[in-house]
Image 1: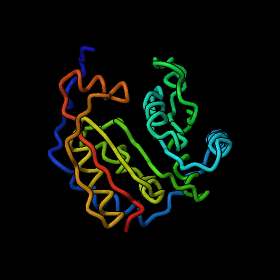
Image 2: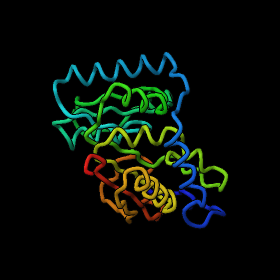
Image 3: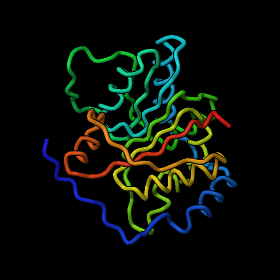
Image 4: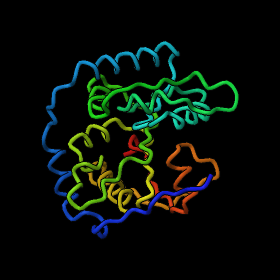
Length: 224
């Protein structure tokens, strides 16, 4: 595959100077946006699919896109159940090329992650693993609040616990995510270079083919 992804350009140099203030504000202020009925219905359906699979640990693939990563994670962790969440009906409807029978220990649902994360927390559901793979970087300086670690829902996301991993082709995004995670969890979280010979998302495959360096941060939020 030949990649043609553009490198990220931005006027922002390093971690945003307002990140710590914004994270602290969100942590101190309850997020009271009403949950939409269609998101509640999607949440209930996803949890029903998980519980029908038996008493197995949960993996959340947040922002799964077409769902290739959901299948890869389900194939890797056969003793878990994977819920892939994305808000795009078009992406979720696309056919995924897969060699052999796709794993059955997974489901993909169309819903808004902002509501889905908050519903998980309200229900006391704690994923064993939690992946946020190649989110929209929103690279303009004024876009900080649109990045997940700058969003009002971030404290709810972190409160879910589990082994958390975020990947991006923009180093600053991962540095900021690691910084925000450390601020809320009290743990040291590092940004690290990452490469793979088996990309699990279309973006990961395209970025590698385009010569981009990949970055990730990982931490076990259940260890204090």
